[in-house]
Image (cartoon, rainbow, N blue to C red):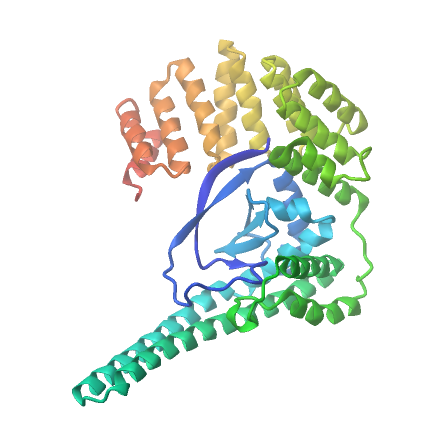
Length: 456
């Protein structure tokens, strides 16, 4: 299920793919935080992981890198730490999996190259340059005032300003160099995984066109990224030299990409957005999927069920069609049938689909039957061990424990939900209440203590 969840705090030092025309307000920003809206969806996450897997392995990053979906319509991606943040707008705009592969390859180049740490070092040096220039300027100003030389204080101010500008330009120049390095690394990863770089070229063509249509006249020396046209020219020769230049995406992967685009379009823009994406391909499976989701979201459960049943008939092994059916049935107040649909989805899905298990547990809970509520609590607890940051799941777990009369466990689940939503004060309050009902020293009591001790 496409769920908009908590906002994720990241350092402002994150390295972005598409900020081609961005100008730093200051070259010497504090390492502050900004938050981004996160989306959770089992189907989209699995698709992105499958596209990214071979690339991350080629980059030597097959473990310890997390992929995070950002609910943003713009075509962009960025890295922070060992996380790659991918905008839903990039998935919606890209017409092929190869374009997404190019985006991920570029971001993998930043992580593998240690660019964030080196950027921190470069900014520290730039700060030193700016401070030295400021002190020199102040010194010149003081000397001018003491000597009663009218022009020297102004000259001192110019020295300080010039030093700060030089520091800023040094950081921007460094960032442009790292972007070029990440672009070249991306080409290498695509070659190693026998993929074309055509998708990367299309991305930069799109950026160049958007910049041109915006009518923005950007000084390339005031940007943290090379201009899209320059990037395109630098990469086109390398891309065409590859023996995989004409390689196409496998049809099955392309279909999955189309289904992901349909889902994002339906959830973010409704039926009209789906029709725009699939203009000229209205009879495709992707278009039918998007229309089914849009119909469901508009409140027509009966029509949506008929549409999703046709999808399942066309692809009975697609777990996410069964997930959609479960969601529709749950909204139609048919929880037992919804639970069966979710059970089918879990059976068909690869890996251990924690998000689908949350949906299953939620459906069991909605039946109101005591035996099913116990089963729901067990299922939700297992699911949340695999998806510990999925804040919405703790609300259902708290409801299950509450209906079973286990108030201490319900309070702790509520505390977990607040904690993973970033509401630390409320999390501490519920954790303290949970401790009053939990056995002192038990694993749950200790977890409550961890939440109480968490920093705000």
